[in-house]
Length: 388
View 1 (tube, one colour):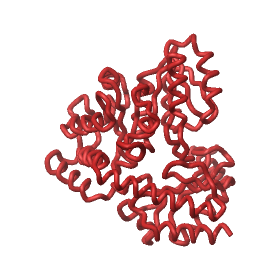
View 2 (spheres, rainbow, N blue to C red):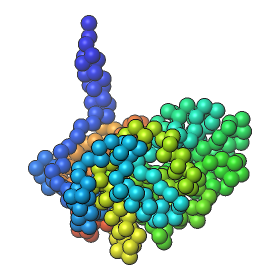
View 3 (tube, rainbow, N blue to C red):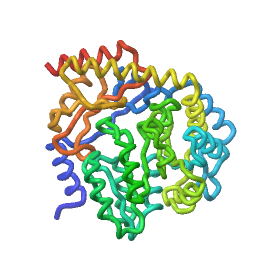
View 4 (tube, rainbow, N blue to C red):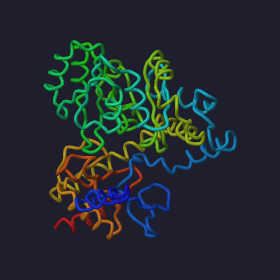
């Protein structure tokens, strides 16, 4: 009789045959434009550290000081005894940054989406999702017990059809990313806000890949679209442009009080380490500063350089973010392209099903403010040689 391991090995063999097997690589250096993998130096275009803050001296000093005062671990969940004072300072700073009444921090962006959606929707409600929403949004909707409806990516007509047919539900919650994590394109926020108002729905946005990068105050796409006051729930992460770890939700004081009492991924999780929280507060301060403005502008200059270089190689896309997908299509071919770049000292991941639809495998190139012009030119040369 086949054992558990026999069944698992067979499934893993199928993943390998389909080009979908995943393995971890040990990185023996800090995050940055250059990393050390398997003892070799690589040019890194895989990181969401958009502003280059993950190894910034200011953040490291904040983390070190917090360790000296508060130690390494928080000890318990925040509602037991783990709500160390750096948490309060971070949440106050996040609320100020996002121009909202209050904020609440979770252990990850995944936990924030799960906690918020399952707290706000349940039996008798409907959660309405963009087809390309992040897995954490999809999982939160499924776990909530609410009816889940999905509209084709950015298809406003389909969204309105769903809203029009949802009058029997107690609550209608629309959830969308503002910058989609695999294609780098933008949600039509102004139009979604108009529909949510027309049909008396709630709107939750995930600004994970927008926080720190868009609009005058760098708050994100809601600020850029001029709809901040019309969004009910705003989620972000501390792990991308802010260079740390964790997730957060900002909104009204009532919303935050509600999540503190109902979000299970907050209530039943040990709090983030104090060093991480203190570093995140320093990152928020940085993003709000003139230096944060300059660093953001450097990022967009680098993005423009990369996009123009790829266009010259015949690779065009609609990305309006630091996420630049190079669509390969076939899963095995995407893996081969990534491996060929790796052999040339360039680290770019192949993204495959189920992260993206079958037949849409790609290289997910991410540009940061820390990249130099020479880094981008090197990538373009190596990719161009492979693509010929």
